[in-house]
Image (cartoon, rainbow over all chains, first blue to last red; front, side):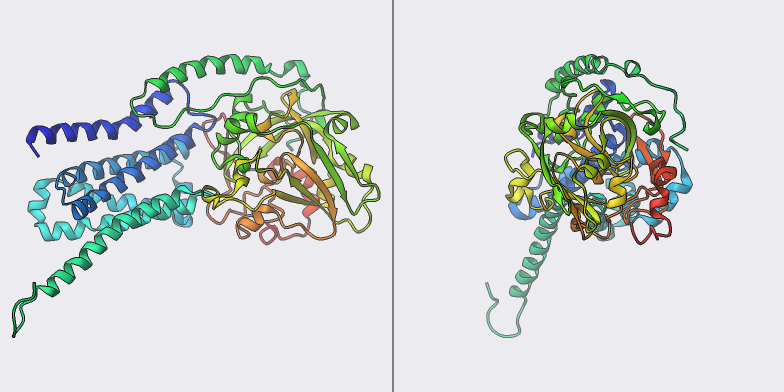
Length: 212
Length: 323
């Protein structure tokens, strides 16, 4: 992909990722958040956190399935936006929902599993965000960096559990996101197994010709 | 406690719904323009309040009214849990006005009674003098509203049909009609749906309590469709899902009814479901609530503030076990 095309693509994704925030700002401005605005804002931010996270996790499968390399250039961008939205989602909970009621929040974090896993997912995103730069890849070395960033799979699972455990009976959305996560992880598992099979077939053998 | 002699509100002091609605209409217009301008069509804004319904004159009963201002009509009619129309808060306002047909409507009152009768809704409206009562309503999800309901005590209707001594509980049933209720249609989109028709229940003494209101209106008018038209029950000291909507059947039974939410998740939703800040929902705390229209959370009150009126019904009961 040409440098120009890459810049256009990145700019487009930036604009896409900022649109939900712009939409939110508009609703705040026009007082159109509905009767329970705090809940509406929290859920809007939470839903978009989940979508950017799953979008980021979908980039590698595009390479594995179709051999495309440009999705990889978007992986970090989408992941960082997921982190940004997750932080805002959490900030709304602290500032607007509970208004810095630390004792209640602390009790909730410990006693409510859906909050425990949600906060854990956010906390785990921090080292990933901190080591997201190319400089960091060099400092850590690619193998270590790759191993660290595989934590994003756990983060995906924690995020799904967070949503599943807070949603009332009858909600379909957590299962849809769960299905999406299963798909993007499934593609990786399939590629890994395929890699094992190929390596096995290509192993040098003591006698006879090298298999095709 | 909550039901002290509140300042007397006459019907004329309640803000005319037109005042709420004019501002709403303007904001809806602005919002509609705004949404149209959005680059990506991400979700619409909040739905708008319904136009004013038929007026329902009623006399305010100050004995059973709390002294807090009612929640805005637009909030009360656009933020609803009425899963027959979908699980989003905006689904009832979006679908109920078009789909629910409150006429013709009958309510079958029977079971262990001497004089069972099926009432036409218009008959019910004329059966007893209508009272207006300002009640608090607390949803199990952690939000609450203050609503000026119109109706009469359920006990008056039950006494009219004369329960036998076999009657121990009252079972309520909501309409079952997939034509009016999209969620009752089955299909893969409704896989996670509740077990229809919606069933609720009360112990006989709870049903006969003066606070239990057979409700036919709110805010000076008939019940809007999304609020459970044309008739519902309101039990203000219990979580909102116990106040079943769009009733077609009221039965006196000998066994404790299995309610819809008990069937859906019995470890989370019990038969009694009294508002109780000391008994948490398994997944979230019940100690505080968000009063719709307010910014800060409030402490949830035992029995939603009606402890003086209903506390004695539960004397000696372990409310942690009988949640």
